[in-house]
Image 1 (cartoon, rainbow, N blue to C red):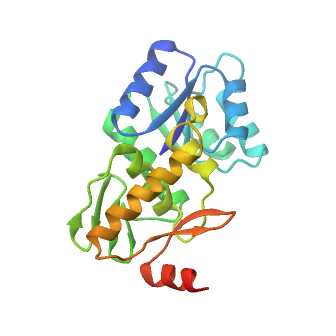
Image 2 (image 1 turned 180 degrees about the vertical axis):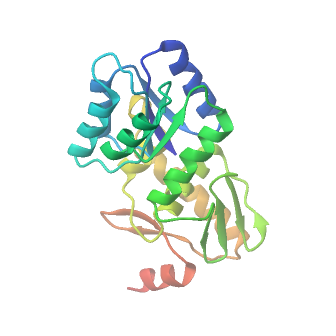
Length: 233
């Protein structure tokens, strides 16, 4: 899961970035609203986290501009402002959640994961596709009751497939989700991760195929029966 953090205070920004990276998030952190708006328009994030008291514009204005740009990414306000009026106004401008500083790392991480699940249409922490179960909170994978050991990058690729199961995902979206725009490798690295995932899932499931390829559109996670129909079409 990739999040965009907007925090003017360097110490707090570093704290949020480090704590959320420790929770398994891919974090992009900026100091001001204009940079955040440019990134939100240009790249895909799972959640946007913003302070209200920004240096160049108010957090409410940033939220309004993001929503005005037709960006539907969930927004969580993480602010020192602790008032009912501020919370009500934040929700009115388009925010999806509100957390007051100081925050507890585990609570913030749990709220971020819940926002991602809900925005993807998943109420449960577990995403199930056939015999495959992806625990979005625990970041674990089981197939037919057996644990599947994945690297962090392999899990990140499978996580995105799970959140959008049944929908094709282009390589560019995987690169944004797994690496962020600052250090993107060549797109063929996604092919490598997909190949590794297919092998691990195939071995555990006695040859069943969960990840399909739609030429020109990307990769898709489907139940094995659906994947067989896709290959036969």
